[in-house]
Image 1 (spheres, rainbow, N blue to C red):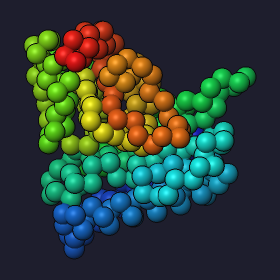
Image 2: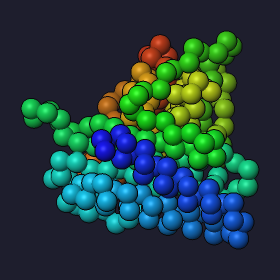
Image 3: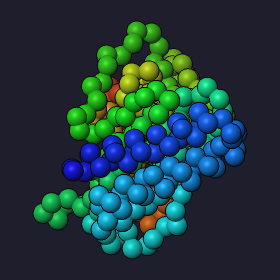
Image 4: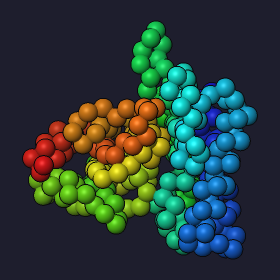
Length: 251
């Protein structure tokens, strides 16, 4: 089984247990979210232990092992991205993230190599190979995905500069995949995030040909000692410079 198949299998395993827990109806709200986090972590861990027992794992739901910093291969996992949305009946804007960071050949630096992102409520799993096909942009104003509870000032500056529409959505992974799926044109985030919140969806977005970076234009770096990776831009390539310029001007 190749790495992308392992990622997809792990993401589907988590999706299955999450959907079953939700359908059972015994838990709701925060209790359902907590149970989902634990069950999805167990499902992904079981697949990785069986298929890639020698690899390191960085997960939101497990203690960080510093040994990953010297490992050649590290799975970066968010078993349930959007715990709050998952706990709300009827919401579909939550996801499962499974990404592989690995060293490159001939001494090339480490980077995201493959990933799968499940959108369980939509019955979809998007992977890096075969890469998703980016749909044509919809007519009308640029649409920018933002947090439904705390849209950053940077996104408002971009919206003002581009005459864009802000579209509130749930989890970070769902928002990135909304760009991949053509639901929106960009996702602009600032104000707090960790490596597991963006690794898998960023890998899928890159495979689809989207531009991904920090909001100041720097590269997104994964498997770093610092777990925080607090901001990002994911957008259609033709929007990258106008968006980054609007962020700079807004600051």
